[in-house]
Length: 455
Ligand code: PXG
Image (cartoon, rainbow, N blue to C red; front, side):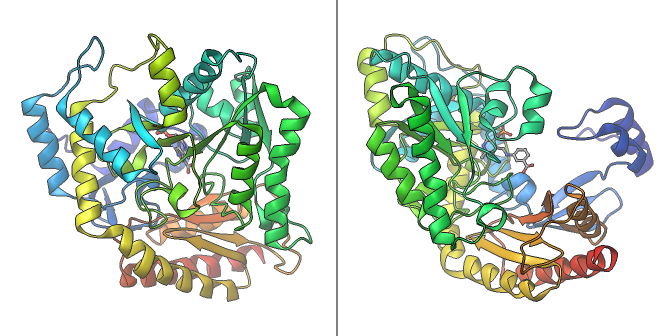
């Protein structure tokens, strides 16, 4: 194996000189210096100083089966020797892509029987836009080209993905976002619910979709895209009233429902898909991340019969595809990863054992003076930092307190993310009770230290 032997400072210097990081203020990073992660095992990552860090985010919501899985490395090596690459254009396919497509349709809700592969969540959401527009154009309704999405939704960082996403600051940097995308408020009770009960607010938030459709013109709206639980927007878990009402509204207006399951797929909520958890029947589902547990890039759009039949029967050639669509190595790793999830019963583990324990232990943190709301589902969770729980007040300073807390976690060797002043967690699915206990202890220490500075 090729290995440069450099010390931490040298890596940092090179990083500062040559590496542009994603979503980073480089000037500030370059003064602080980056942490160099060199190894992972189980639920821990290790930095170049030999520190062992508990990974409460499963990488970036993706390392579902944990680090250091030999089986995944071995299958990748084997597949590279057998067939490292071939394309799926020009009447060709490969055994791994076919097997995975079949397998995914077995796991997905029964009306989903087709799969289109790509290599990232962003690409998959580009594909979604292409499929949605094509679907309506083939039906003779090309003017139906508006996609409704949500504020605080995250759908990727290509221009299409970031345009679907609901972050004004991102849109400002893009300049000209993709036209035909409209954003409604998210079902974020803590931030937006006012005096309503969560259930009342869930209905109100869902009804924003109907209001938007009426306002834009029902004949112009093509689709609604949403994450079952909003991840990067702050782990926004909708009240129970939300999704059934959204499903009814989509059915009533005949618009396509797209579930972005890049985070909620593959066990995070204790089911293969969040759509199954919420009993919704999306026409399209995007997946990425946990499909390979992040070991290799792969994503897909799971295409329901309504769209697939029209595309196949009436569509002619679909002018769309990526060099790496159905990459055999990525598909082989995904298949093995799905085997691990099944064989180790990790979905059951999340649903029956560790998800409930995670919820119970996190909930105990609600007694901390800094913590307003605690919410979790399966193995995602969020803790709202507040100067006044009763009023559900926010700190001034646009996420400054969240960053202070995140930095205390960082120093204390826990990865917990901040989205504004919301602390979020999404640990690997192999988490045990001991890991949860350790996480809660480290988190409480970080809250104590933060409270000392800000309360
Ligand atoms: N959809 C969802 C729901 C996601 O969470 C994407 C699409 C895009 O996937 P790619 O593979 O193109 O990155 C994501 C990705 C964060 C963070 O800050 C979250 C993501 C990516 C980067 C940062 O939590 N999610």
